[in-house]
Length: 145
Image 1 (tube, rainbow, N blue to C red):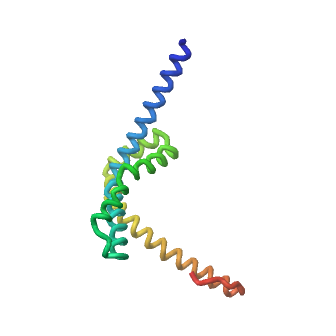
Image 2: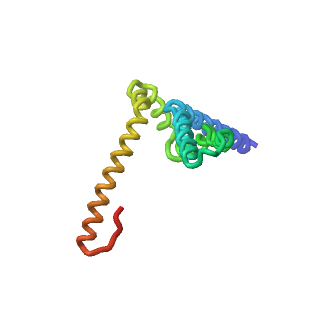
Image 3: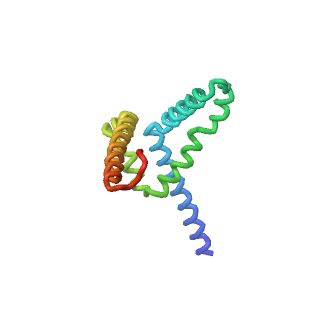
């Protein structure tokens, strides 16, 4: 009987531990403005649809895109954080994002990400052009990228 009781307590404490970790991850996602990024992504996708066919009714687009929401995205992302980070790391990340440096990073992250992606694309294209050129010099028939 004591063993069963101990196992029950252990199971309950594990569930509570996991829930608190999940809530901490959710808090981090809220802190970094994930919901705003989801809305931005949604707006961009809607723009692409409207541009490709302006005759699609806005109501239909809004209805179809209603599935692109915070809860659906959080479910995916929380599982990734939970799998890859322990609770101590989650606590440290949350503390960091509440500091002035963390707040500045959150504020500037969209610009940093955009500029980084642009720089990475240019860099990647330059490297690929050099590699393709070198392969052609060596007699290989590769397509331009």
